[in-house]
Amino acid sequence: MKDDYDSEQEFVFDASTVSILQTIFFNSEQPVLATTARVKFMITRQDEKDLLNLGYSQEVIEKLKPQEAMDIIQAGLKATAT
Image (tube, rainbow, N blue to C red; front, side, top):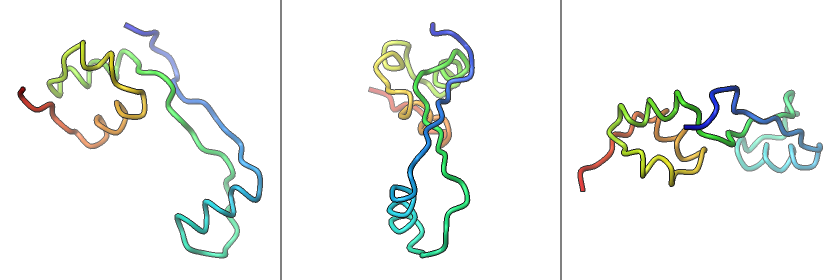
């Protein structure tokens, strides 16, 4: 199992990147107030517990990317029987 600690990293975007993202996601010309985003870069013990409760095997969990694991957990997506 991986260490259980805060698994988010902060990135700061320049004004032009924020403007592009704003246009893509919000289709707006209004200024964006926040210029940081958080990206998950590891699967924590709690994530593993949550995935196991959703029916995922340890083997499958070890192959998941951190963002995939977070998306699965947030959606409550149960493992399918194979």
